[in-house]
Amino acid sequence: MPSAEDLLRELAPQVLGAIIRRFGDFDSSEDAVQEALLAAALHWPEEGVPDNPRGWLIQAAARRMTDRFRSEQARRHREDLAAAQEPPTAEVTDHDDTLILLFLCCHPALTPASAIALTLRAVGGLTTAEIANAFLVPEKTMAQRISRAKQRIKGAECHWRMPTGAEWARRLRSVLHVLYLIFNEGYASSIGHDLHRSDLSDEAIRLTRAMHEELPDDGEVAGLLALMLLTDARRRARTGSGGELIPLAEQDRTLWDQKLIAEGVALAVEAMPQGSVGEYRLQAAIAAVHDEAARAEDTDWPQILTLYGLLERVSGNPMVTLNRAIAAAMVHGPATGLALLETLDERLAGHYRLDAVRAHLLEEAGDADAAVAHYRAAANRTTSIPEQHYLATRAARLGTRTEVSVKPYDLPDTR
Image (tube, helix red, strand yellow):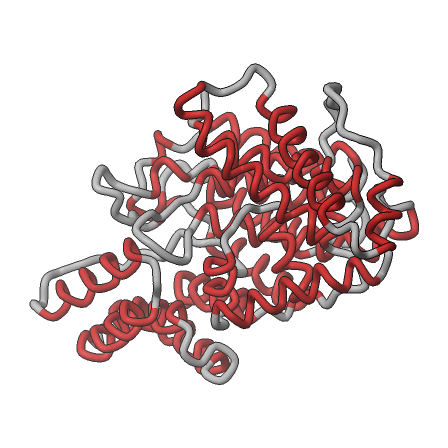
């Protein structure tokens, strides 16, 4: 039985979708749902969770919407709108509107950045501060971006329905990108004391499964689901008893979830021949190579390097180049990897992962002093406490000339 907090997070996008379906006003609906969630957080701990918590929340939010309309009788168009609404009934549909909400948030009227921010807020349940941190912008800027996105959707008079066949392709890329961002924030939280936020990664997997059911023949949807499963399979082995980060090569692979790996590999194999190969299928293939190695030393790094080369051509993402540098170092030595990193100094200037990878490769190359400097720079720049500890520990060990082995990170590929 999930906690009340977990239950509210899970139900929030479903309730928001149901209220938008009924009343059509995104901005006011979100306010009403927030009030309903607050009421639930106050009453449920004392009165107990109702038998139908989703229906309880929908009813509470619908009553607030009705009250809101009735309180604005001075404005005629609001009076007309209120009169057109059906009063809330005791009957609540079981239809889950989360996918419709997801596609609404990725409407073409929005810029990609606005669509991602709005989806993370409305569907992913991230706070404005968390989204601002993910995009490296001030919280106020992100709040304004989300507010403008909601107003733009309202102005575009978007219809509350799933997109038609021709609309799928236009919105699918943004939808998949947003789902992967939500998963990444859950698998490797960018801020705070916890390395994982399994509520987010689980929700991203749930939504992607729903997408896969709607589009079973789309290779990229299947590839994204495979990538999430193959990555999430390693979650239990990724932290120690104290919550500390354990790099990929040091993980106890008996803790990896073999059921998820088998499902992910099967999906990746099934998806590969479906149309031209896209970035999610290639990332899934890389994750599968890692997961199929019984020991770290059995990893097929030449194959991973080849796949990263293809992925770099498809995506152009500098994070892919960063990971290709790691693979190149594993195959050809640290000097090759360090040379590749020089091509990223401008595109990833100030990003902690560039410093972290450079530190690892400098350590492997025997330049301890330079490695310590980059470990410390990376530790100062990341906002994840477990990553700060991991990087600071690496620097401290090198500073005392303690013998350590160099291990690649276990982070998503394109974050």
